[in-house]
Image (cartoon, rainbow over all chains, first blue to last red; front, side, top):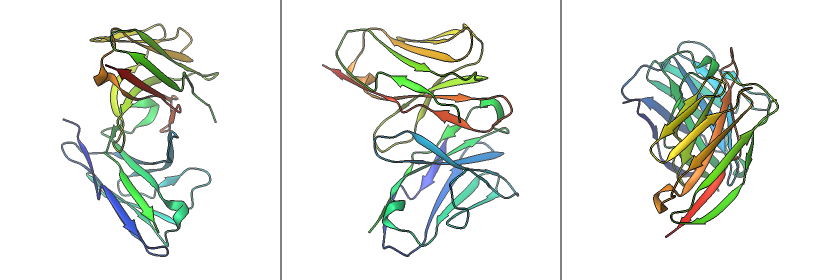
Length: 118
Length: 111
């Protein structure tokens, strides 16, 4: 149980285009979903937290107009990288929590999406 | 921003050896989680520790949470090539969504 999927698993796009990444909780309802970014040989950095039906909360330094997050249902959150640039190339990982996610409630991670911007 | 320092960053050992990975912070966490991540994949949760002094065992893996809930360790007994991977610790503070991740320990177990 507690499986989280991401689609696509990898994507290559041209600079200036937008890319949408989906995150789905397959066998549970996710009250809260999280989006992380991981650069090579670095750890995961939280980008934003989203709750179903409300606006996402972005971490300091993350542009909300560039990284659009939509938590449309209790099983789906999407991250859209708008006007992508080569520096946005990274490994994007989502996680989902069946509860509020506060205080370390378990987060289940997706397999990640490798974005390469040419 | 609280930081989690993991050590060592890299570890290469022979099959059958024991090893310990450390995760330290100056901040108190309500819980601490250990993950293993394979290249190109998301982290997979190994264990969550929530009580100061808690020790949890998962087959050959032993996890300990410090009494003050500022540090943790992961001990692997008789390492096997299948243990190879990136081990990440992540701490959560009470009342916060955020998981703070350490930079990870990259473990290579040589057959």
